[in-house]
Length: 340
Image (cartoon, rainbow, N blue to C red):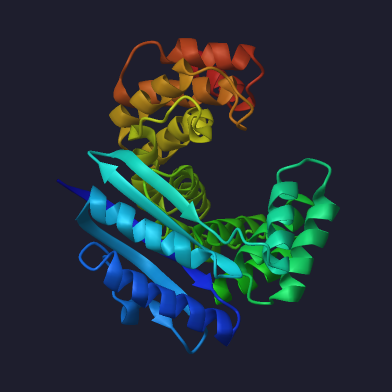
């Protein structure tokens, strides 16, 4: 059987000696063990000019045997690298059969510094130690895209946005296949209210991730927010329709934002004068539990009342009254006009 497969990423070998070793090994093993199963040709993925192995994005239908052979050989290659990451998915009917991340795990100093920093990034209160470890990895190999991306994430958490943007730029300039770097850079541009630039980065994050990843949907949601800021209602509706139609797993953080998405989808549909669908969106937002997503129950009630009024549905006065009773200023103003 053949299954959809996606493979992308880049490995950096750092020195001519390491590059010569890995290429010799690759050619020997491909000829001896993987002659018919390895899906990449040597000349298509190895680049001597910058001592790297790069797979911008491969999408194809292959057998499980070929997937395992290809991943096995690429994993062996990764142990000669000083930096980089390759991600591979095998998918069957929308479900992930196999997912692997291949990264260097050797005892080289640059690798160990990065591994230490990567672990510290996840520990609250260890931000300065994480930056120190990641900086050491970069000092040892200044083309370490993953170290730049992780350091940028920590700098963003510390509100060091200038340093974070610098590191995201360096990451992307070194390895343009890393979607989290575009996502992080987009968030900085959103803080600066540079909505068009943020959208460009979120588009790249979406293109370089897949719909089975959490990051893909986080990027879709943020992109819809940027389109709303620019009053690009049709584009916002496109992203929000996709997001609200998605069935998220219980442990997927995107599920937390469904209420936000339904509410804003309703707002966008009102702007597009699709009042029936707007009402459905507000109903779904109202049915979800209240969370700290920046959307109040008052807002949902107010705009649901407006949607009901626009569609000629009964009950809109009740929603407006309830919103006014909960302190909604707009609802109070609307109620005065209704009662005149």
